[in-house]
Length: 138
Image (cartoon, rainbow, N blue to C red):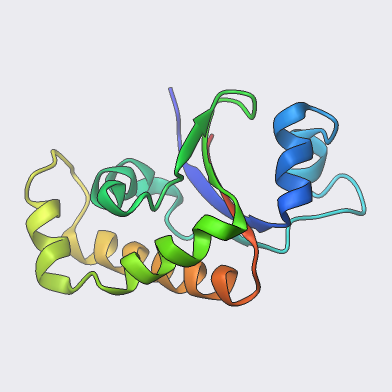
């Protein structure tokens, strides 16, 4: 059973190497080697399921899916991150609350809203820096 999920900003090259296995995901994501992700957002770790449901229409947890980076991961290369970031920026609290009301959760709306807003800001930074984004369920 998954316990959380984190978002990583990384280069397209790093994402490609993670997907083809030439960059070990454990060493890379857990800072076991000098090469590291550009940024990690773990503030929504325990509302990962809610994030996947609320951000799905905008592909906020990845345009593509893979199990090459276990347990499960969604990813978007930098070309797509900009469009995802623009779509996420259009979400308002009312729409987030509407989507929240459609999912079964024990998490408060306030905690989910905070995480959504932090993911949106994360995507804005990733887009501005032309980074790819990886969402990994752990």
